[in-house]
Image (tube, rainbow, N blue to C red; front, side):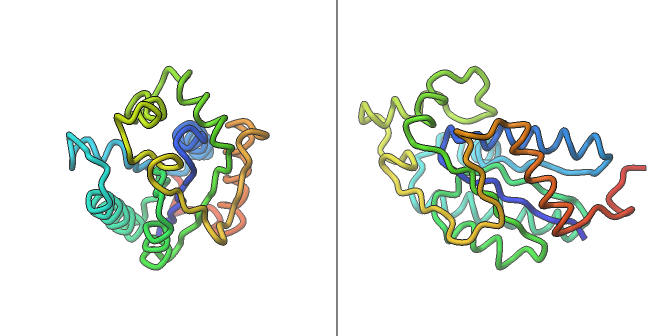
Length: 188
């Protein structure tokens, strides 16, 4: 059986970058893993997203279902998704046996600056905070929509103080501690 890590935080907190760094570290150890990105899933399920509460319920429900199926089939999953409501992440926790939540805590002002400057979006929409401030989008977590911080995440990383490599290393240490790395997980 695999495991699932949900990396959550505000847009611009470093989720996609850290998810990819973690995957690189797992690849180096020959541990198979797969990143499920809510932005990638959204491009398929809702090509013209509105980011309504109803749409988010559908996207996060599909994301949790996909992660559950993969984990049950021995695939380790890294979820790269804001999941702005606690209930989305709690659904994963209550549905997936080997689950861990990682909260990337970062001040909104730094997230806004990072998002404004970033070159690689990893399928996320561009200029989301700018759109929130101009009124073009009213559903950006942290501005127009709430972001509910996790209550008891297994890992909290302050990404304004810790770089992506170190953050991935912290998560990897917790994976080893909680789930171990078995011979079944090693690529042949």
